[in-house]
Length: 347
Image 1 (cartoon, rainbow, N blue to C red):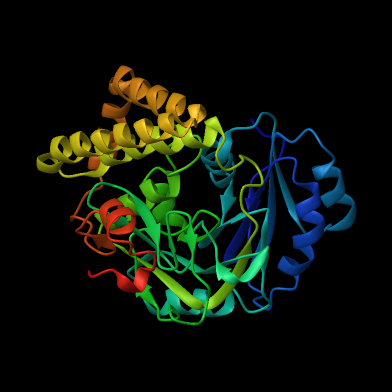
Image 2: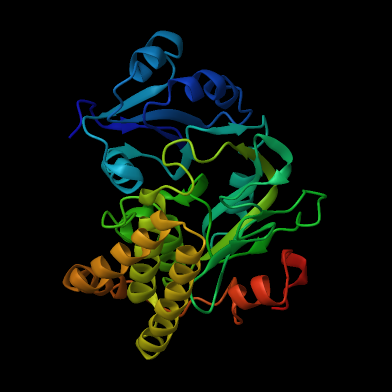
């Protein structure tokens, strides 16, 4: 699994996950090492790369610890394999295509230290190619509607708002972005980490949901700012991305909803997915049609696997997640009512 021995870090382990990411490592590791917060260790987790990523880090950044995974284990497996061998008080899950700012870590760790019930947090995430706009993956905090559609404060579906400091307040949210997610390490292991059945996409929302169900808060702390490139490993609109988004969303609902809400919510969600597939068919987006159909088939045919995941999740449920849930349909409000900005939504 790994040729690297156990890594004992300082208080914070910045776990930088990469796959064939040499270009991003060149661009962004120097900034990570300039982080003013000193009680931290940077660990590069190489997820089965076939390029010179490891060699480049070894030769240019000897202060960076390296954890090597032989075969790409996805976002979930990459972190689960590595974090099982990394000791720290806090984990920072950080994508290799994220640019940080010098004080991005100081304030958010201090805030989590002062508020012991916070299980996970994220900074404000801006779009690195357009740094005055929010990023797709997280923006200023993740939310979810009653049918399981995720969106963000600053990003609804594909509409990215310009950052005019309108979402700079610290808030309790539903999910923290996997692009840059700060977690209590003990809690991560207590809950079983990321779900390996997801492989990639929705895994951080599933983990966030389990953290909330365990009685902890998740927050966005916008005084901390990072910039995310996005789409660097799995391209937007690809079959792989679409398939995992649709399948994993259904799995996530089945795993984490209270029993009384599973059937009506998933029934409605499947209906909305069929509408999306029909729309894609008429607009000749056949890749999306195939991804939705395959996702639904795998959701039903592998139900024994998802049932076990639900049973594992139920072991840690102490309460029902409430923060960051939009009790209306974001699909209806966005596409029919034209509410493209988060500020127009009524919670």
